[in-house]
Length: 622
Image 1 (cartoon, rainbow, N blue to C red):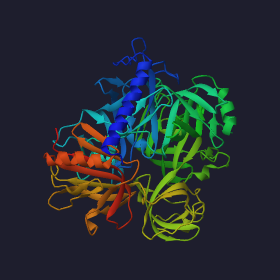
Image 2: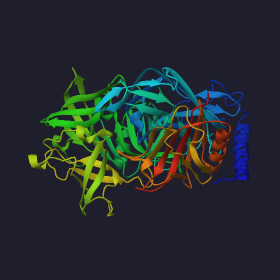
Image 3: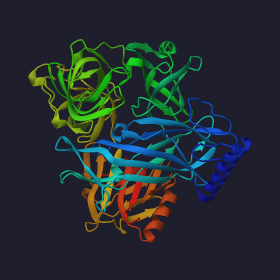
Image 4: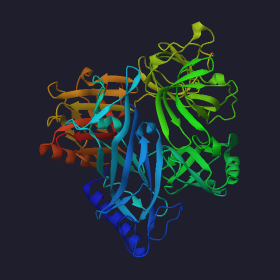
């Protein structure tokens, strides 16, 4: 943890670096033209190396798991702020984005060219006028009304983020820093499904972190610029959000021996894919999934799609979970239809006709041959084909995607876990129709005794009733048991658990029993509590009042992120001690705490939670 004198020293170093870089190119500038000096204009382009006097900044979007099945809003402005008070717009135009798609996945949205400088803040504007926001109510995705605490409808919402003083990004030529924005949908809303339509009270929270620690899974899309086989990389012009036009800066993507490719329907591996990519014309559509290495400041792709293999490029794409299957007719839930014009249409349920000769692949395991029987109930898929009259006439390809299964442990053996299923992709597992999943009717998957193959996992002990999030693939239709093949398990003891506490009215000045550099304890007294007081681990909720004492939230030793939300201003910290001092000043000054949200690791029955991220929303701040 940095001490005050260390922080001051670092600030002087950052300022000195920025001054040297600016001086070397003739001084700084500002404004909409991104002036980097008297004669230099820093304009975002396809180039990887910016002009002298200019640097680059990568910006990505992500979100934690939450209550919403859809959260589509328009982002009308995204600006970074300089210490001199000027701001620079990063996006080309208004962008309509479904933020739910960023659960567990980040998307790179711009590789901006900016004047070399240390950037101190972010300003973002959201337009809710035509928003489509939905929550699950008794199995149906119901549209909600989003209102301010005083009852007003939300139209345009502008937030300013004061970035962590210890970790502000320095736009530089090479390597460019990454600034990751987390929309924190759980922390931002109090959801009441008893109302018709459901009512959502908004307390907007967005956090941002420069060069976040790994692992960070990323999606990068955009037209091809060029290929460098010697450096094992290729370059694209970023085009996020399923846009059909526009460019948000050039980005280099690296490949390695594990990278798999699908180019116009043909499969390649490793550098063979890079050689095939080099044969493609410039501006060919690409889509990559991979990881960002925060130490080397670069993206490495694990799977790359090119040309007609990119959803929405030549063929339309339907994404969702298989709710039921009858013969070759699938019913999908929570669907997104990606059209070739760049539009994305949402329906809670759609049907998909699956011809017997449909090509079925599992990204990451392209060599395995699969028939249409591989598509079973609960599986998350993307299907490519031609859409007409609300039915697929030709599903040319189906991709089996990693599926998240929330469950609790019944019993375990060396080879299998017997679990009670709770949700597939945040939708109640009891909604799904498991008929036909077994070899015989008696073998059909039972959501209360669901068998998970764990032979690919490291051996370990599994506590009875322990909540788990299991990642993997549903067994082929008509082949169960086992019902599910696990490739990874999250048990929430290190991260992924979320705590949420709200206080009544505008909040309470007595919301915290203790607060210092070592952590905080929320006050759970009945007279001041609001509607929420739980720890969530996947689909398992623990009532905080059931613990034998008030829980202590302890910050992690490294890479923590903490936020104080005061109206439309969000102050960010990596030093919990500095966060605690400022929060105490607010409370002593009469501020009331309305919402406390944290993410981290939690063990059943514990009265201590280790937090990686924590946000406190003050309720009586204009």
